[in-house]
Length: 329
Image (cartoon, rainbow, N blue to C red; front, side, top):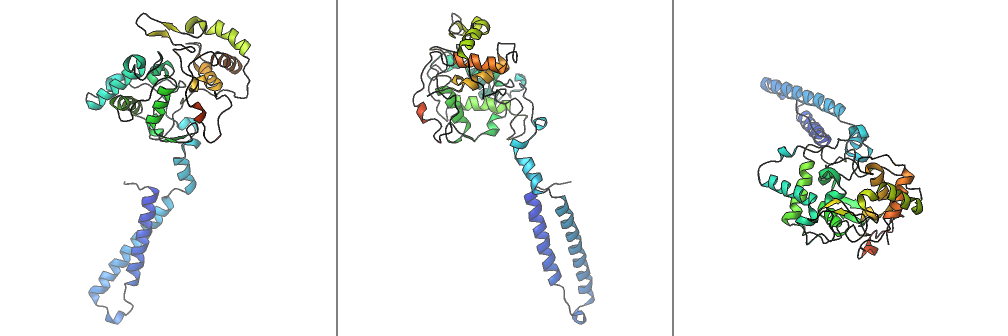
């Protein structure tokens, strides 16, 4: 059976009622002037109108209430159970056509960003230094369905951003580099890859596991304890000063979280509570959720304030005066 949207149903109901009014008023009241054949046609017309009126009543009863429509369209009110799960699609399902070539190029870029785009990356990080698992790991800022959530209002910009602007924000901050041209093949490749990650997900629905785990932002960082915990739990991979570990070919074994090869102080990961949320859910590597909120905040408070590149013009961030308390100035 064909179904109608609420708007289509309302239009149909209104149309039926209009037809009904025309049909009734067009019936003759002068039975003496009505021929037998007209009486037959009139009876058939009345029957049709009655049938239409019955159908209109049925449609009206079947239409969802306004609150039902709100529940459907307001994804912020959706329960976690209704949210789609994040999974990495089988790479073998990437189509063998022009779109598939762009998807593969995008996958190559996000995993080898500083080698593939040396003119746009000012450090030695890759997109997947933070967006783990090919950008498709829950609670590691995954990209699954991100292209259907944008355009999106972002308070840091104080306006609506499209997904390409969001990507360039990472190039200028996390990569300490330069923005891609909005319509370039490389930008289109990254967006194509993100779209492919979202191919089996409902449009406009934020999946479970988007962003990072929640952290208690009322906690204050104890950077003395953070330095101690960093040495115990983080330095074995990221180095004593957060400088990372690199191979002879320039690729890293573990990325820098401080110093010249790390993100600049305008990046989200340079903020105490953003970094703490990532640490809480994913660090130490392979031991996610093994630290308390306070431990994660202490570590983040320490390493985010280690020396790192400075973002130009970060004073223009949060133009509406609603900057979070951990923003670097």
